[in-house]
Amino acid sequence: MSAGEVQSGQDMKDHPTLPERKRDLRLDLFRGLANWLIFLGHIPDSLLAWFTTRNYGFSDGADLFVFISGYTASLVYGRMMVERGFMIGATRLWKRGWQLYVAQLLLFLVYTGTIHYIAHGLDIPHLMDQFNVAGLMDDPVDTLVQAMLLRFKPLNLDVLPLYIVLMAVFPFALWLLLYWPDATMVGSFLLYVAARQFDWDFTSYPNGVWYFNPFAWQLLFMLGGWLALSGAQRLRMPARSRPVLALSVGFLVFAFAMTLSSSVPALQSLFPGELRAMFVPNDKTYLAPYRVAHLAALVVVVAHFIPRDWPGLTWRGFDPLIRCGQQSLEVFCVGVFLSFVAHLVLITVSDSILAQLIVGACGLSIMVAVAYYRSWSKQVDRPVLRSAARAE
Image (tube, rainbow, N blue to C red; front, top):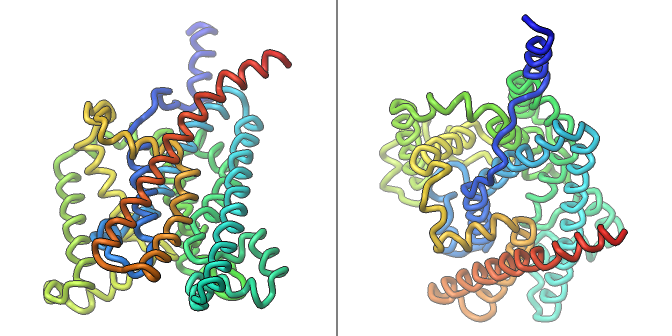
């Protein structure tokens, strides 16, 4: 064997296999869908929640959002870390984490300020307790400090803090995923098991723990990263097999019936009480294993029926969802704020079924408009930034 062949073999050993550079529109489509589901699900006491997946299965928009976020972060920054070095990839990840942190603080200020103003201006004081912002009245300085530390979170502002924490530690996890993917996933799974076994979680202010336990939810983020970098290639054949597809469909049907049995008493007779007690109520904080299994089953079914090169992805009807997925951060923040606005309209104007449908449609339309505007704005800014860089 020649020296060149030895060197080539060494390069193959030292450098991981990276995914294609071509953008996978399925990620944008389903991340946009996750943002829509989160918006609709965040409107309290509304039939709009029946348009989300949480009433028809164990996982919901939050699971999908975290999973896809891990997948896309690995796609983008994994290649950067391999081609340009660990520090370049790490600092770009931390930069993105900082953007998320700034977005969280801005959203917190606008969100809590609006709730406070509306609650007192329209004499609806219960909004302060309902949305967990009453602490701002009792101890505003300490509450703001705790918000900056991500320990104080009003209602519906739980997802971004989880994402921020995961991005803060992901540079090290990504490096391990690139070179020791299977061992890293084993470590992620063991951390997940330990968090559930020993009730590990971050504390919240003034009491309690994080609604999304980072020690547990990191499993979905890491699973997305593992599939993006190497797992999907190795699981492609078994995942497309008929037995796995049948098992996945069967589990989705079971999850559909089990979840719906909470709202449809007639379905409860299908399940023994001991079996229902294992799944109802759904353990979201510590990410129950059946939530992971449900999301995995969805991934198998989607991968089987919607391949990467599926022509339907270019259908214009999907474009609003895809744009919302591509501008996910802005759309998510707007959606959280609009969920409060929608609730306010329903409790002060009308909560009829027609009003709920109109409010939901208006909210989604605004989110889509924001996504299209951000897409256009970035295209306009791109030549300007290039010209500025050349001038420097």
